[in-house]
Length: 388
Image 1 (spheres, one colour):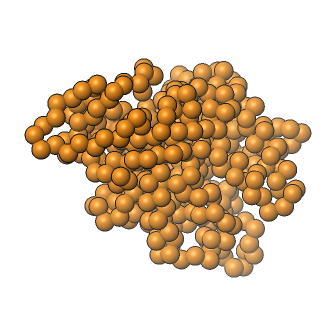
Image 2 (tube, one colour):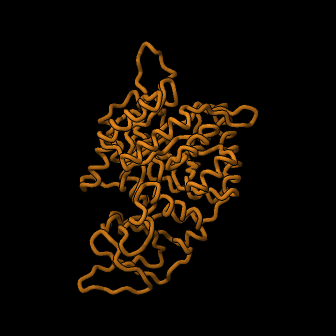
Image 3 (cartoon, helix red, strand yellow):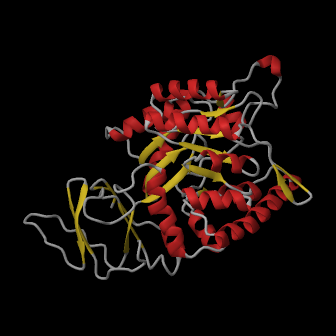
């Protein structure tokens, strides 16, 4: 994946849960099972660095109010299976949207082999200010509708919430840094929620715990504050200033565009007026993305799947190519940068000895036609065939 060269013919020797040899021909130990996938192309398992297992298509605010956490957990189990069958063997769950640490239970059940699903990094609820993004602000206050996030209004409260979430099983912290978004005279306007100093305190605490911070950050100045603080990723990243992009390059902080979610919202809006607004935002995002490519910032691949159907998020890679990246660059963003964002660098993202045997097979050559990743034919995770 690093060189962009396809090895043909190619063989991969798997022993237990790890790859032990790769080449045009490898040793066939006595009694080894041979899986012949014909002329399919083998790739490392796909990585989605921004998913929501606890969301499904439909009114997001209503499903988090009307559906119980046990029911949402059952749906999350089905979502995890759908993503795995689509070739995603590792994912980062960016907030349960009000289901608290329920994603820890799903992760643990997957790890124990009780249910099928990707390797998971989970955050529990996102962290948000009072009255901020996702805070049920359209409801009658007298009804006390719960936020979809955990409140933290200053650095001390952020650290307190992170410690509680860590105790409950989170692998990292997800912070809402911007919102509400609106377009004004063709330019994105999105207020920040935390200062650079507050985000820096969160990053420092995450490092103490051996974890990271990923942020929902659509635009300036929130994206700048996130880059200054040294977060693990800037998710959505619709608007990045020159200084923000300079810092992202310097600190190797990837942008995660989540195009397919924006496309889905534009195509499934509840009114023509809403569709027009979503289209304007998407067009703006595309233009900004081209500037980001030209600036040479790092990218990872995350789809924001959940508001659109699980198992369909490989289209994110198609859109990233369609809007300006080379197929190889997108695959590298997905597997190499993605493994680093998830904290599994040196473990996943490559077909190399010592790595987990997370392997998918696709038809054709994805370096020539990236849509091949949307047609996964075979999935192995940790040496176990989960989609023959």
